Image 1 (cartoon, rainbow, N blue to C red):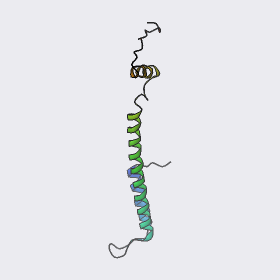
Image 2 (image 1 turned 135 degrees about the vertical axis):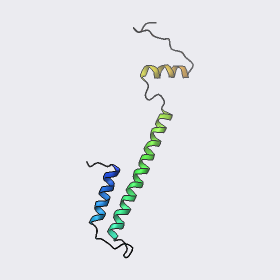
Image 3 (image 1 turned 90 degrees about the vertical axis):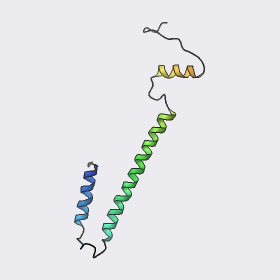
Length: 97
């Protein structure tokens, strides 16, 4: 898969535009192919921005509504017990009090 860095995308875009027939500056309108390529790149850019924004919001919501997601099982059980008003006894290294 090709690299999708901004410099690579700009290079690809410019090389595509170079292959189109040249036009004198401001004398003739751009070709339909030029408009199509430009609008395609703009549409893909907008889609990418929307996707990245949605991913950022998704991660924020997951962290907000699943706070125990990155906890180990023992910590999750301890916090659940505290939520209902119970304190679990602390266990030593060997599992005994």
